[in-house]
Image 1 (cartoon, rainbow, N blue to C red):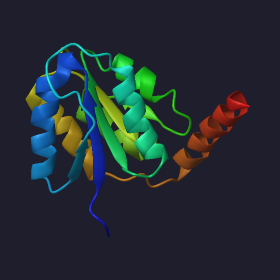
Image 2 (cartoon, one colour):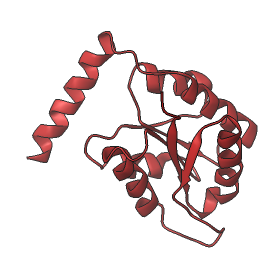
Image 3 (cartoon, rainbow, N blue to C red):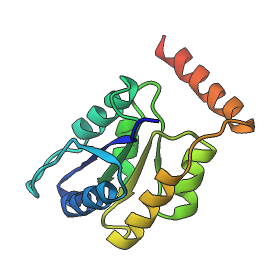
Amino acid sequence: MDRLKIGIGSDHNAFEMKSQLKDYIESLGVEVIDFGCFSPEEIDYPTIAFDVANSIKESKIERGILVCGTGIGMAMAANKVPGVRAAQCHDTYSAERAQLSNNAQIITMGSKVIGIETAKKVVAEYLSVTFEGGNSARKIEQIMQKEAEFSK
């Protein structure tokens, strides 16, 4: 099996957290593609969220981690890319269920909501599980069908 490849991105509010998470994720043996931002200078988050989500859609990466002040804006932006499911997660149970029950390709977090140690635990949990289908596959398919209807 190929090594897991994920994308990571943030706005200026979460630049420090993103940098620390990138190092942490790499220490787990996961390949990380950094989509920015690359400094604490103010930047708008949508472009970064769209870049990560499009990379998932194009199968360049398998999963993504997006961080902004709250995690809300990043989730909203990433979810605008058809076929991509982003879930805001600030605890390990939500991170586990984002993947196991919802096959979320992206999780988002808020650097002004949780600290780095909690963020590391959330990321570790998210990366440790894989969507298994079952009853959840039927529900995800319904979401994807509705999304396709709206895209017409």
